[in-house]
Length: 88
Image (cartoon, rainbow, N blue to C red; front, side, top):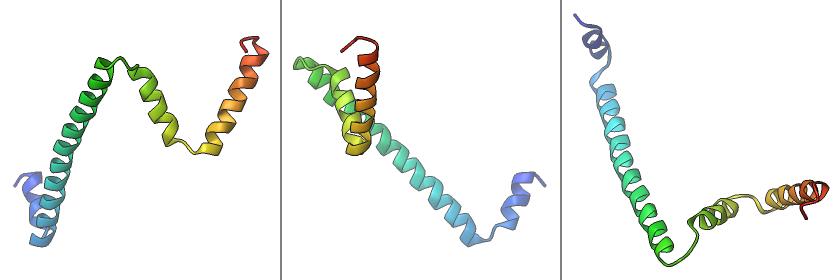
């Protein structure tokens, strides 16, 4: 008897069905994730085609995800460091 068969024998029918359901759900979600990633890529291509900087758009999206207070603190520290370097 193989290890896989021995493990399958240990699992009852309910557990086997749960495992199958979990795997199938994750597989569906992975397909959806790939489809969404393709749609995001298309939106950025459209933005680029309209003359927008995708790098700046990605930065704006990243900033919008951050907590406002934390972002302001990081910006203040960055400004302080840039000032110390004579860049501001």
